[in-house]
Image 1 (cartoon, rainbow, N blue to C red):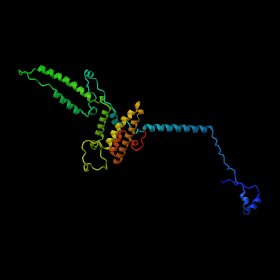
Image 2: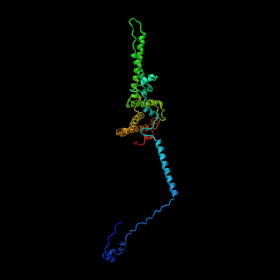
Image 3: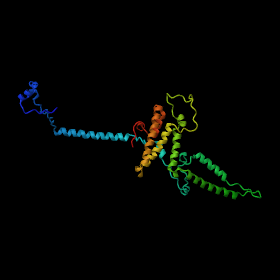
Length: 315
């Protein structure tokens, strides 16, 4: 609202004498402006008795408790998008091989000195039990003592039996030493991670899943496809790479849970990068397979859900 103009001290007659054109409009011009504020109606307070207030407070406390219970249930059923839930396959990756028993104790109790290490996945240096058994048999044949022929042409069977028994003892010592050398129980973390990578390739590679998993209903026939046949095991498909990244992710996540891991910013950043790389691979696999058999198989085996694929990962 514009401010009021100051008027001269002269009366109405003086104004009309100075400005004849304002004789009729002067009364309207001198009319005072309204300075009365608008009347505000006071809000009446609704009277509430003590019983109503007590019932309202009970309902509020009940709703808060219900929300806390629902939040607890939701968090308990939620799957960690980084590490996922513990499945049988994931547990087998993190299960450390049992320690080898002492040689003297094992021989005194008639127990094998390599108890629990007959699996191919528990051998280091890319060895399998078949390769190890073949090498041990060849070394035993190569170190077997030659039967000497006496000058008189008579063979001393007593000396020959002693040499054979001594050779057997030496061979058993060598076998025990070789088994301890190739065991993962004395291997490093890098050795176990390398073995787990081989397991992922042998489990989720398409050279294995093409025969084990049922084909999708709308998938084209593999026999009629003109693709070049795969040479060697499958190491580059999305499911294999996602499984290998999961091995690395769980390894880094377990390391960050240690006492000094909370301050390791470098590996925290590496963990974020690994998780986002896996998320991209799973998104591509889901779009390519249209949520088919391969996608469901890798998600169930790794213990992941849609939160690890679609939602934003924050750590």
